[in-house]
Amino acid sequence: MSLSDQNIPLLIASLAFVVICLLSIAVILHFRGVRYRRTMIEKIRPSDSEPVVIEQGTPSVEWSGESGGGFVGFLSAIGVKTSPNRSVSQTDIKLKFLRAGLPGTNVPTVFWGTKFFLAVAIPAVFLVAVILFKPMNPSHMLLGTIFLVTLGLFLPDMWLRVRTSGRKERLAKGFPDALDLMVVCVEAGMGLDAAISRVGEELGMSHPDLSKEFNLLNLELRAGKSRQAALRSLSDRMDIDEVNSLVTLLIQTDRFGTSVAQALRVFSESFRTARYQKAEEIAAKVGTKLIFPLVLCIFPSFFIVAVGPAAIQIYRALFKV
Image (cartoon, rainbow, N blue to C red; front, side, top):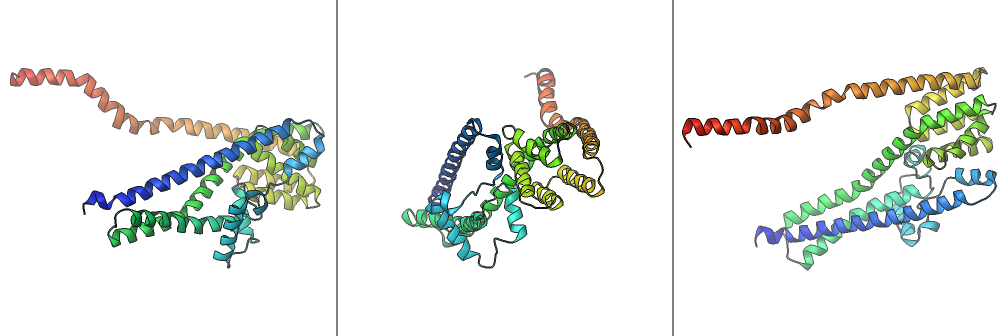
């Protein structure tokens, strides 16, 4: 058996894996578009302002068995069976998924079930392809199976890490607008709780992730949670240095009874100065970062175009070609 014949099952399994991934991405994008359209319809639908704020602030239960269908319930059951030592109520586990924008109570079990399902399904596709087509070297088959099992176990973790970093970037991008709106609301005479509610309402279209966080903070305050605990929960969910500094400032302001408007104004000015300095730092690094593309890509091409014809003429003159 030639080497190309031995690689046919591996190639087919790889193609099947790519096709499954593309189909999964297409399904996810489709349902995300459907959910986005529903959200836009709900936002532009005429209704009272107060129920809209409560509905936007309520965390959506994603991946739940009731809304996700039988397959999601199947994954949740697998997650419960395969991870008996893990508790969904653990703070670090809940916080990890909250930072990814997945507040559903059933999310951890579905995540663990997905890891186990991929670790079994992907190698199964590979082994079926090997059996249906030409047999493979047992050592190669074992190595391919181990690799695909490891890949299936780590793919959900990679996806969760990418989702968390993307959401963190969106939150950091919208935080300056939220801070400016909060300063304007507080200086206009609104209380801190009312300002938080108004900021969450105004950011619903431009920064939906940040709007959900502020609306959730507003709901926690309305439910009777202390302002200090609610602000610390916001800081833990967002995990952004600027938000941590703002939460510390608000807690100290509330504890010592100082002016919230003045504190927010000073913090906003210092934050804006820090952003300017960060932008200047990034701009100053551009020249250094351009050295490697210039030396490796642009300069060789320039030398070939500029010196190449002269070098050819010199070579022809010296060797009489």
